[in-house]
Length: 478
Image (cartoon, rainbow, N blue to C red; front, side, top):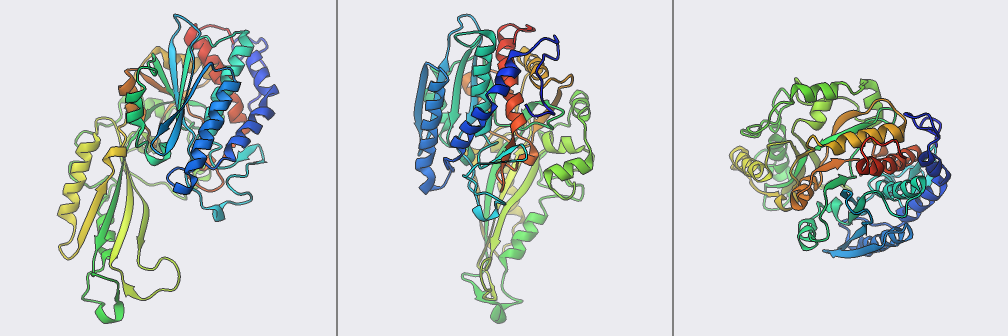
């Protein structure tokens, strides 16, 4: 393992750790496999890339078979494919379903620094390539975690019953995922869901994610003149949709940094004292955060810490805006239309449909009568927030992280983004715990995405310990 994470002996027993030894010996093979998978450009939402998502699913299905899983299926979900794998050879032991995804975000190749996004490259202890961290690396760490678990304990089958569901359309909002859960529900029954598509706080201070925010996407178009009109002919009298859209966006926040839509906070509660204490226990340095996140400065809602703003409070972001002549020479015309995409992040007790109705009413009341508009809210792909209940599986995960990462301290955190966690938990009737391995500096959805090799190592080790902890809580077995 990398020197900062090397852990050849158990932090608890002082005896050699076969799990860490196994992972270290096989690290090169793990990185080579991940590189092969990253080369498959399984980009979501781009029609010409759709065949690659099917190739990616078949690659993963083959990997599951090679790792010994006796039952593997590839399921069609819309234009993409999901992979289901099952290894249930432990009668009486818990059954765990692991969720993640193998599709990746679109790329702008011109923005990648040294290597193209689908030509993986090792530099300075990191593997670069689209999907290396989000989320192919997380899935592959699971596979090697199973192998390390078996090898360290001399088992023929995992100590718990394992099911994997790796979907191929998460980056599009999982539009067919609910249908798949209903169709294959009889196969997916489990006692616990492990959700692996979230982030860690820092490599030297791991933390268990215990909540994710919900998500509602919005697209608004504001229409001014009936066509683009030369500004020299109508300037001063014509409605300019850019000004009206800008005014609307500016009114989204009040002077305290809170979302200024009436009724938006009706169901929002402040973080409990216990939760605030958990988050305050995480180490935070402003300069370190700005360096790792590359966000230039810190803003947000007054009265709340950075962690609370990220994980416990609602937020809205403008993710794109367009009008006029963004490319090429300007025609000096008043544009006929301006458009923006927004992402609303929701917290517990906020419900997607209620917030959608609130937003529709607010835009209708705020927009100028001099323009027309169209507001589209993506309720079908929206995601509800989820909070992990206080269950023994969380404490088991903490013990596994202590062993896998060789650390005495495991914090608690949230996840600023969302995902189909609430859908999984409600559909399967099982509690859900999060174990993701991304870091803010991994550049998810951005250029130069990468994953630290030592993160792959200690993730695989942690997961190997986790299956033992779930099967035999508090066991010192590897």
